[in-house]
Length: 196
Image (cartoon, rainbow, N blue to C red; front, top):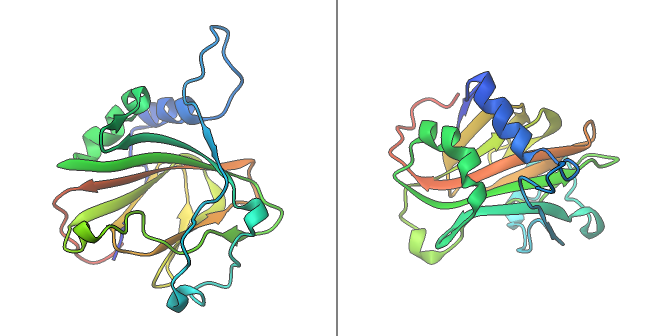
């Protein structure tokens, strides 16, 4: 079960948010809006065996699995870059936030995907109503795959939300220089009617 909302933020708010996360040279004042951190591998855990056949897209090789990340909120860690998310968080209106992280993957010569995973696998959330949302900052051919085989296109200013226990996989893009998403894990009362 998932919900998709396109044109999630008004255009001006979206453009400002995107501008703050888009990679660029250091500006004239020597300030980088979002400091990206290099990570060797997207998903370090093994993919559940029953999900290996959900998609015809191959899992990305270890050589190409690296990505850039920016952790904005995780427990006591809160980045100064949270200010850029005020419009997004105001609209989502979470009761509590578990984690917010921006991810930037780079263009590949052929489509590949991360391993299927859930963002949080701790035992203490087994009965939780936590949600996962992915907010897309640019349009690419690298979408998101869900455990039921659903393919969600990566469209700028789109928010997709599903229960946190839903296995998902990021598809790396081939048509743009990079793919940027903001992953949010949070608690909120949501009625899961018919999926959109």
